[in-house]
Amino acid sequence: MSAPVILPVPVFSLLSNAAFALRREVFVWEQKVPEEEEHDAYDITATHFVAIDAGEVVGTLRLISLPEHTKIGRVAVRQAFRGRGIAQAMIVAAMDHARATGQDRFYLTAQSDKLGFYQRLGFVAFGPEFQDGGMPHRAMRDYDKDSAALID
Ligand SMILES: CC(C)(COP(=O)(O)OP(=O)(O)OC[C@H]1O[C@@H](n2cnc3c(N)ncnc32)[C@H](O)[C@@H]1OP(=O)(O)O)[C@@H](O)C(=O)NCCC(=O)NCCS
Image (cartoon, rainbow, N blue to C red; front, side, top):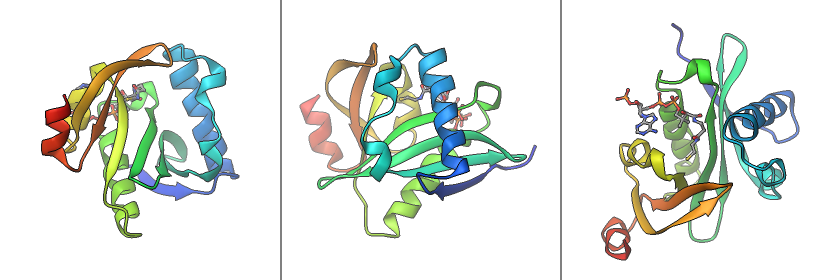
């Protein structure tokens, strides 16, 4: 099994189009997120990453640069490619890419059943559970971890 290639891609490109199609497949069709919530205005300014295996886009995520931190979102891996470490590798690669431009505070909102996945990557959950796209979520961050735990 080959290791996927992970790279940032321009928002208007064949690869980002494949990433958006994968997001639709995973979030709209599989997880039943309302279609109108899946794309948003951040897609224009976000940095999009794809994981490519044998010429096929099998994973994607986006980074949104905000004043207080960089937000990781829309993490999706095609069903048949899950459990191979692709999501983990994408997150590590995206964070490394952002760190190279001086961004070192990362934040995300995780589906509540995915907390363990992000905890392994150094994130801690904080604040109350909330609904997003029809699913329960928690906020998580990888900085100020002690105070994050206190808010919990
Ligand atoms: C969540 C998702 C992105 C994980 O992708 P993946 O490529 O299968 O994840 P990885 O293989 O990199 O997983 C890395 C590790 O996290 C573990 N893991 C995966 N999903 C997990 C979960 N829901 N809870 C806890 N651990 C999890 C894996 O078992 C693996 O552990 P290991 O290293 O000991 O084998 C993928 O299942 C997916 O696209 N789901 C649908 C969309 C979604 O839920 N996105 C996340 C929104 S918060």
